[in-house]
Length: 254
Image (cartoon, rainbow, N blue to C red; front, side, top):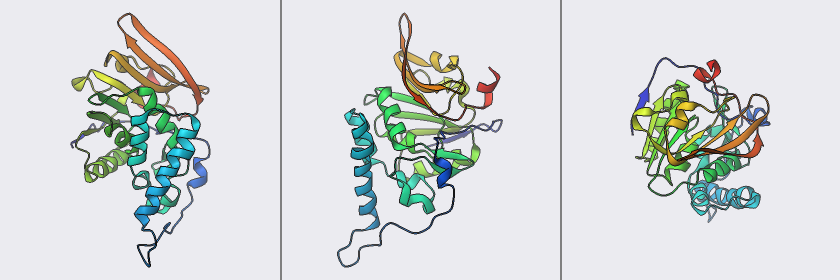
């Protein structure tokens, strides 16, 4: 996996859901000890909690896509959050990851992934790598994942973690994602994890016919939107009200 870097960038915020700030205080300790006298290992505990998360927080709220659920069951979310907050990794909450950014709550990750309607073998672009968790979820489904993060430290940290975890089908770029990644376009799907007040035209242009773009849109009031590109134009679907931080960088100038 290669990490591409563009040094002329602006601050790009990841998803911030109401309540995230309550997790900003420091925590310590682990949820379980290593195997001792037949007790579960820490890994066992995290696996159990991850499976419970999928059933109780995601399936229970209506997500049904089998490959999305399979991916959510597989990817260890706790590895993408600071060690001191790992006991909270499988709560349905956003968590701080540094640089005033957060990892999205699991339900939001799941519903946005489901809305992409990904198929095995497809190519997807993510704008806003953040912790790298959403990219890992996508990489369990798609053949190729291209992800862009504007905050250098987060970009480099996520790239290193994803490489360490063995994801060979993820390419990471440190840059402003407004213009997408034209040299590797077109994409079957594009996902954006911060809210512009309009739909970025470059991202639409980089979609294949039949491609899907999922993103929050709005200034103040926001809607999670799915755009499908057709031969005759675009189809827009408003899904649910959401609250994301604004997309910054070039998006603010448009």
